Amino acid sequence: MSQIESGAETRPVTEVLRQARSGDQDALNRLMVLVYEELHAMAHRKLSFEGTGHTLQTTALVHEAYLKLVDQRNVDWQNRAHFFAVAAVAMRRILVNHAETRLAAKRGGGSVALSLDDANVAAGEVRDDQLLALDEALTRLAQFNERGARVVEYRFFGGLGYDEIATTMGLSTITVRRAWESARAWLRRELESDASG
Image 1 (cartoon, one colour):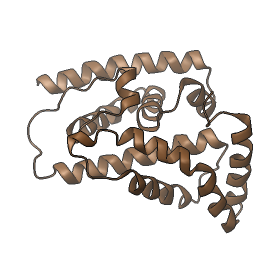
Image 2 (cartoon, rainbow, N blue to C red):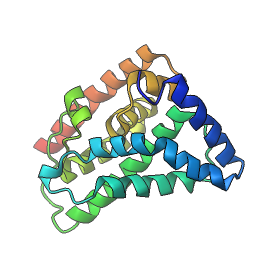
Image 3 (tube, one colour):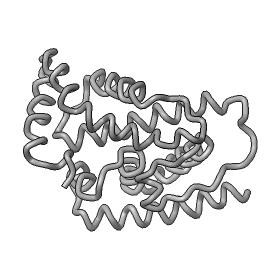
Image 4 (cartoon, rainbow, N blue to C red):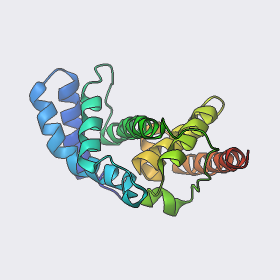
């Protein structure tokens, strides 16, 4: 069981999220202390591909994501897993925006094939062009399979496990696994098609 799910870790974060939601500004400071290490680990997983020339630093990604998270006034924070699921979405947007900026001058050739195997999800070995191709494919997937797109987003961008995603989405773990397999298969075909066309 990960830190995101463990009962001892969940209760303080969930309580602080509720306090922050009700306007307690000190709760935001306490929240950062409670979630920083896990946010840093999420960011590190996504930025562990330094060999590809990525210039965004882990700490910068954590701070930018955290600022986006605490600036959301209309989020009804449910628990720690929900917070990290929203963090995954925020990190996706930050990484995609960063990749778009870096590739703006180079944009042109076809998309580059990307494997969504579990090993690559954990390692975070993705180049800017692959990240943009995945983001575009996920946007297309969400048009007809919102659940599958969310599962991929939480798993790929947030590093959440099946149980964490199930908790966040209110689904069974087996449903999440099926959604992951289905979405991954569709994305694989889509990305291979984009790369060859």
